[in-house]
Length: 410
Image (cartoon, rainbow, N blue to C red; front, top):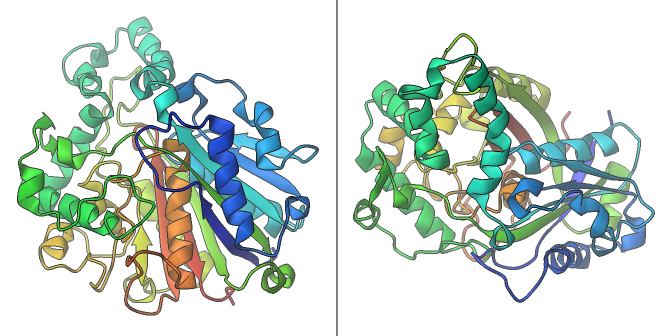
């Protein structure tokens, strides 16, 4: 496998709730042009394009076909990927393998969502319906009581099960979730591209927001954002000519387990906070990256926190902090930008969530940290040799991870 470098990260601009002034192709084109402008490359140098989004959210089939011109992809191979929340990182992994395998030398990956042109909950219903029909056909217990209540609060309803389980296992409290949510909002205020920017946000500000599905408050949940992220990957031989900056892909990994609703026929409901498959996947990624002690060798992490409690949970399951120590770490400031394990200096998904781009943004932000060029004040104040990016999707059953470094793996 060849060494692969990320040589550029591009955004269309700041992620926001609505962009009525532009259409989807224009949104994507802005990010593509931004990424190319930071390199010595042109559209002609891009050999293949990987595109990721959730078509059900905008109600558009095969979007990769009708905006290929705006991607600079006319006459080039294009692959579209949709895997829920992991979409962006799944697309990144595909782009990585395109280059690492020798199939192509220079590949562009695009993740985007324009939520103001659709309805997320309607889109989610379209995805969940097959599961609902399976429940009805088999008269599964999920069709009443415990099972259906998971859907009553939308995605937050399902996440509340995970949050309650995590708090019980870690001896945490709602106040600890308030703390990490406030930290995320304050971090986002330092990121010029983040959606929800709240300078000086305090836990008490989050605590004033209403409960949606206990223990999760409105202030613990992610927004629906419009935006696009573009990354350009190339070979070791071409990296220095393409750009002055590079972050090297040291490991990619993914894993899948049962959805939180478990086996619909047998009526099982799995523990959404356990995430055993995430632990297995993380160990595989560390081995691939040549990392033996992630708590010491990873300097920053960007995790997919669609809900604030996950910014405590995922670092534990990824082996970045000890199990059950998330509440203690946030209370002592150890997860802050200046802490010993900074998590989501960008503000994370809980502050910016254009779903098709969200997991790709985790890789992009990790790359910017490795390059040392994160803008606006959210660059961590120490040299980043290794950074971890993480994504999750589905009903907590899909997990992906990417490890980047400031040099190719040995």
